[in-house]
Image 1: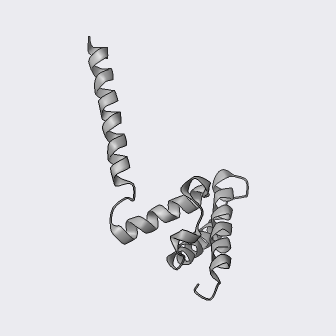
Image 2 (image 1 turned 135 degrees about the vertical axis):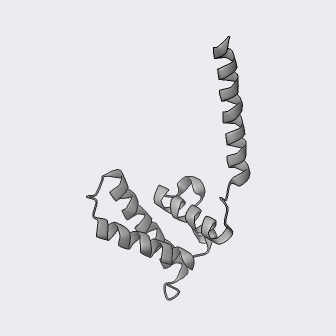
Length: 105
């Protein structure tokens, strides 16, 4: 993948993510062979693509966000937003505890 220029590589990554997203959303017919091929190519293209060249989290196609999360987990052995996940889980637990206390009265 290093033969593709950086801007071309970014466009390639975004195109693959868009194709995957179209299949997942039902906008294109699901083709298992093509889906696996696009997913594999996306992983390979991301391996050599600097994160700074990719769009922000809020503008990324969902397929790209998922591929980046998988890449981060593979490289670091933990989820990228571990503190955010822990905080969300804590808030959910507190809300459930309050709900169970108020429902048991």
